[in-house]
Structures are given as C-alpha cells and as structure tokens.
Image (cartoon, rainbow, N blue to C red; front, side):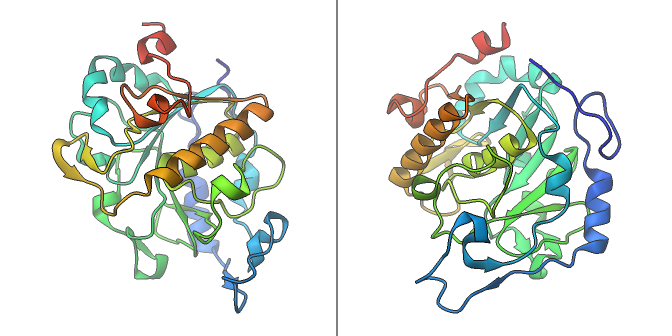
Length: 277
C-alpha cells in the first residue's frame, strides 16, 4: 500500500487534510451552474459537462492524483455491526463515510473524509448542511451536489443531473478530466469516482448491504430516507467495476451478505483478509 501526500492544506500524518482549501473555497466560491433550456432533451456529453454551463472548483485540480494505494468507503448497512472487532483498524486507513453515519455511536474510528451525495441535507441554497448529516470529527467534509455548496468547512464537488447515470455514462475519475459526477444511485459508489480522481487504485466497500431496510445504528427498523432502485444500483456497480478493471484498478466488496457481492457484481473479500488480521 502506498500512502503519500505533500503540500495540500495542513498535514496530519500522511492523510489529506483539505480544511485550509475548504476555508478558501468558501470565501472565493463564484462558480455557478446554468442548465440549458430543454436539458432533459439534450444533456450533452462529459467533455461539455453534460450540457451544464459551469466552472469546476479549483480544489479538484489540486488533489488530482495526489494519493495512491487503497481506500475504504463505507455505506451504513447493518452488516457493519458484525465487523466491529475489525473496524478499529480503520483509524490507520484512508476512510470515507456518507450521509448520516455519525448516528452510529459504535463506529470505532473517525473517518478521514465525510461525504454527502444526496440533495436533502443541503439547505439555505448551499450555505448550510443539515446537522443530522454532519460528522464533526471528520478531517474533510465534501458535498457532491448539483449546485454550489458554500457551507463553512465544506468542499463542493459538482454532480450531474440524475439523468446522467453511471450505468449508461460510465465511471469517471480514472482519467485526466472530471465532469460533474454521474450518479451511482448509491452514495458510496458515486463518491468512489472522487476517490479515484484523487488517485486511489484499490477501492474496498463496506456496509453496502443494498436493501430497503436497516442501518448500522438501527439494524431492525432503520430505513433509508427514500426507496432505493436496487436494479439501478447493481447496474451502476457493474459498470463501475468494468471501467475500473479497464483502467487497471480494483473494486472489491467487503460487505458480509451484501447484495452486490451475492449477485456476483463485485468480488467479495473478507475484511480480516484484506487487513491481514
């Protein structure tokens, strides 16, 4: 595993600390998005940002290919409760959590990156983030959203309209240009494109149970905020794996009993084996 970074923000060990960049972006954010009339009929292509008029935030260029090696991306599925004895080792890894993960008080580490990739948490026209979706202890906070997010200490990564889906358009972040990110219909998969843009070559997913019920903090009754389109999620994961393989990178699921690996979409690996535990 190669873990290296120099010169961005304030260093904490060998982990990317984007807080200084986030503060600067919040002051300087002048990007805007205008969608051409009739965008639902003409969405353009990746090279013209899917028909959206915009300037990508400068911080994305600054972090491009600054890392390599492996990273762990967490959903919030109840399978995580069965992996608690191993999750303490995540404090030494590059980790990403999503959405309401701070609800799970048993999580034995603080993530490096906390991401929201759905519209509900973004409030006050991008000037704020719903507290339920914050993870105050995380090193970096990133919102993947259609329009600019200027909330203090949050970075904005543009997202394409939901008509732009990974299963049809592909998995981005593997080359030298980055359009607004296509949706993977699952926040961990959508943000995986950003992780690859930063340079990670091995992506391991945890907690992507891909069901309609259950969260790590409420395995019995917790529900997702919106009904999931399971078929779309599986098709997006399949396209993501294919594009990663063509780029010489790997995408692996470490979710015990998760639908993505049970359906054969991603290969499964025991987390203990990955960690050498």
